Length: 360
Image (cartoon, rainbow, N blue to C red; front, side):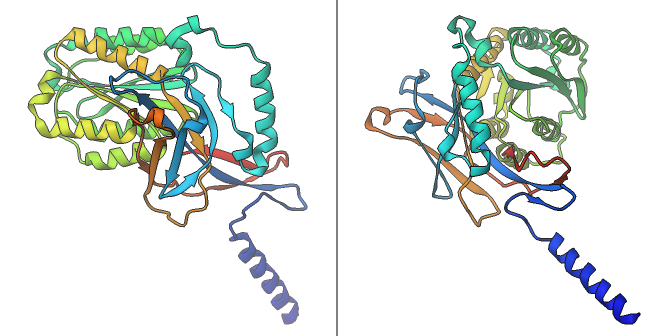
């Protein structure tokens, strides 16, 4: 009897050990249950401008060279502005080639995008999170800022969803991510001025919220002054936004420029995440800044790649360059790196899918 128990214990112990192995491909047991391995897909929003600041269009995947920690990467997906996504099948993992080929065939048979759809068509598929400063810095010009934000929301006609948050000392999710534009505008109109400004605390929470959704996301911040109540340093917010691939656009009033530290932080954060910083001297400038952001989103190249083997589990530096002499004087704006998210494994009862891709 003791021998039987010993044999049973050894068998159970060996089975337990085998369960801790990290599978590299999907594994299926006799019950039909599969383990799905999450393959990280790194997405980059890339803006290309010439020496005069004009957007450079009609570039091809071969015009871009991407390295991660000095390791050359192959582009898996490519999209420009309001054009369709091009899947470069040969650059994708083997287990996703079949589905990618089907997607490419579907795209080839779909009608061409009507260029008259303009900027809104280019923004289709993006989720926009707006974070509005309602601290005591906003006592002046509060209504004008609400007008500018409301006009911006109405102009995003074909964006998938919009969320509107406001902040002073605490974050208020006035309108969670939704397709209801009228509801989001109501959220803007019902905001009231508060007390101190905890911008970085609330921006961190906003980025975390946005990271829960798949696809393209962008955070647009309207701030009227420095942060005087946060416990979170801006460097932590920047790193998280970089790691999850969310560009942060900062619109600030002229009063914010009176605080050089805040000005420098806004510039660094937006540049590091692939966004832009604007300093508006009047309500007209505020509206121009929102229009510029909408225009910028419409001209971004979306590049993605599956990282080549890399032992570095810490911060990875991304470098994007343009190939060829004709593009020498052009400038690139995108995030400069990321920190890999923890790997996740899940048991699945359906045997049809072997692997998933989650963007970083």
